[in-house]
Amino acid sequence: MSLHSDARPAGQPQAKRPPIPVKILISGGFGVGKTTTVGALSEISPLSTEAPMTSASIGVDDAGVASQKTTTTVAMDFGRVTIDESIILYMFGTPGQDRFGFMWNDLADGALGGVVLVDPSRLEDCFVALDYFESIKLPYVVAVNSFAGRATMTLDQVRHAVNVDPDVPVVAVDARDREQVKAVVLTLLRRILARAKARNQR
Image 1 (tube, rainbow, N blue to C red):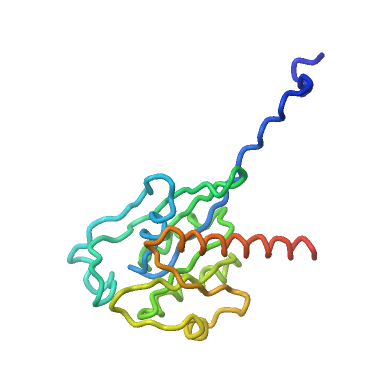
Image 2: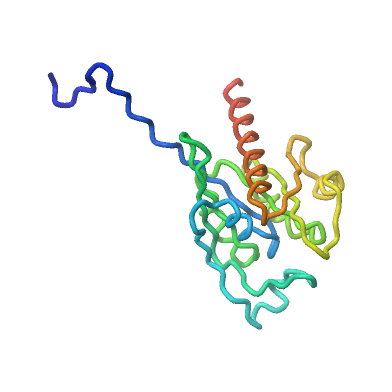
């Protein structure tokens, strides 16, 4: 018998396959809740590269008049969650400031999909992420985050305002709520799977 034979004694269980790594991006404008979203779902303490905002950011990093945000992500956020025995999800939160846009290509490398977080009172902030995902043909969902004291819109109003294709899911989320964030991610995974199936049937 060869030393490298794969033969197993009768009755010995077959070794489990390692879980498949799935990488997604969490994106959107500055202060929209990307760090909070990653932290809400991650089963490990999320890696965050937040730094205190200083006077140098005045007029550049604007989280809105109702925001109490005092830090900003200068590179990325990272979290991990086990979906089941076959899939481990890795979440990468993009920096929200345009001046860190040079990092997006590296963060998007190997990603299967993305979540674009939207603040209804600052819709224009999500357009950079939407345009980028469209340009690289990355499947995504639009998640409208809840903010106390800020303007609200219905999901239909948001869909019309951001002008995404009819097949792009537009869903509501409270970025602080683990179950709601999980529902958004599962919606994205279903969209990724549906696109993959459609591509294989061509």
